[in-house]
Image (cartoon, rainbow, N blue to C red; front, side):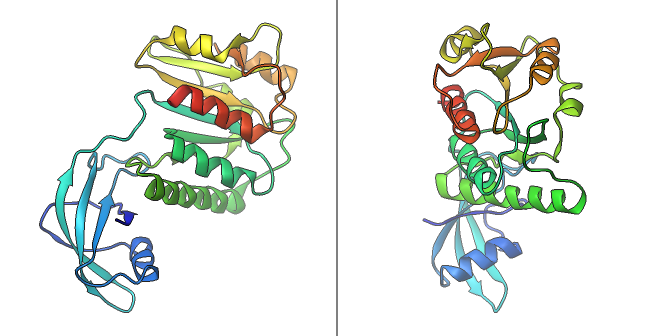
Length: 247
């Protein structure tokens, strides 16, 4: 059954005009009155209902779609551990791909960062448009994969500014992907964390973080971890770590 993100309150039995994005998607699929769909409203930073709702299309207009909200289903497909990814933005289309796959895996949020070695530099209106685009990519990924919580894509910032406000706690662990000699194996580090715990995972761009950037992160309490002896692409490394942390 097609799934749609509907960032509005959902109440069983009510007639609801779908938001523009969901309505367009319904029309593209050429659904008709009487067809069933699934709605969820657990958006970025939202206090929306957990789980999802069945719904039935009741009216198709030229640009609007009306549905009747049906039964609430308290399904839980989210990861037991809350993982937040902070990543030096890879260039070209790789960030789109990274956001899509991270959302499929169940990441809680993504912080796009500009670092010393970042190729992609964003500011002002261009940065805002990119973040809005990545948020829509995350929504589409959740609609496809069955996730009922859309990860929040934070505003673009510099690594230096972001690092200054990070701190570890008994319930929140900071991990840094590092090629340094003192890095711990990721599997061993995860096994030592226990459950449940929130994790903020910092991964660099193409070429990795500079020595000064790593030192600044370590000074804030980040624990260096490694994925092994192979050198992975920036987006591959971040997703490999997420898979280990979330599954």
